[in-house]
Image 1: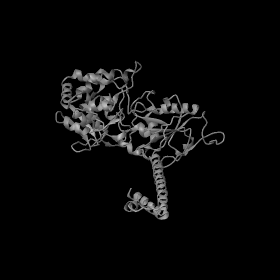
Image 2: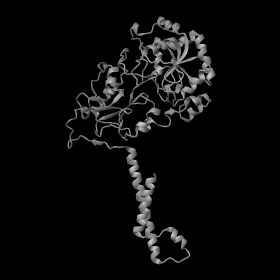
Image 3: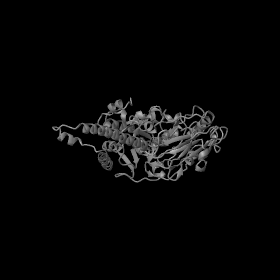
Length: 457
């Protein structure tokens, strides 16, 4: 900013010297003396010139600033028509190509992981899934994970290609990745938020609707045996020691009233960095403190889905779960209580009353028996883990985001219409998406006021 000011000052000085500008100070100091007619004309003319010069400089500044803000690069849009045909594009009758542009977990391309997690053979639509960027110009849809190599975006795109915005982390941990992404870049959103074009939650409940085999249900005997084995009250595993939700402060206050076993890499925690260790502890405890690092709409991660190990999750905000179709009676929400003492008292009550505790497992009677696939996500609560291709759960074809994208690609090829997201920043990071310092606000008894102000009612 200082260099810009000096440059501007230098420019004005040169301007004055060239046009023989009479400084205002000199005019004021000699105000008692009559000004010659020629001097008045020169003064007025110079004032006009200076005003125009300043206007031009300010205009140039805002034009440059806007260009820098929009993007660090410009994407060339190529339109295919009879005058400028794109010979390397597939016809609308061809099988759509879906390209994974960059990585999701370590060195694993986002497309490798998606096709590994979801059985594309069960999809009624057929697409070619690839990580080969040589096929970029032939691709109907390209998935971009903005947290990985977000500065290496393509420079040229065809106007009928679909750019897919993919993220599975909260806005608190992703906001600074948008500075290299220009406006009007994305066409489709693929996230954990319910309002996404393609809903991509960390996991879901799969209802049986009377069609599941007996082996696909949790039997009452299995549930009772799991519950009888539990000999500890509550646990929490995490690696982010200081978080936007300030969950660590709530854990500290609640820990003064009840016993919470802490695992992870933070001070005061016990190391438990293997799947075997975590599974053992989940089996031994009644409650899992599924406090997310951020309180944002629909941001529900693997912490909650450990309930498939038959443990009751305690979450921060019930409002986060709205519109997700997750039953209200499978978890305990902190904001259902007015004080930390009330919460602790209720957990101790459930510890003594097994009948009341067992009601939190009623979901096992209506939903398919699946196990959460630990290891897929980049940030495990116990620290960074390598990708584990553990296909040990049978997901229903209806829950197949990659198939939904394939369907959308087919429909797009036929209609040749595309929606443009004008400003992805406004979509992902608006002022009512997240609540900062949630735990501290709740501990002070002010969370309802914040909900109202943030339109979370």
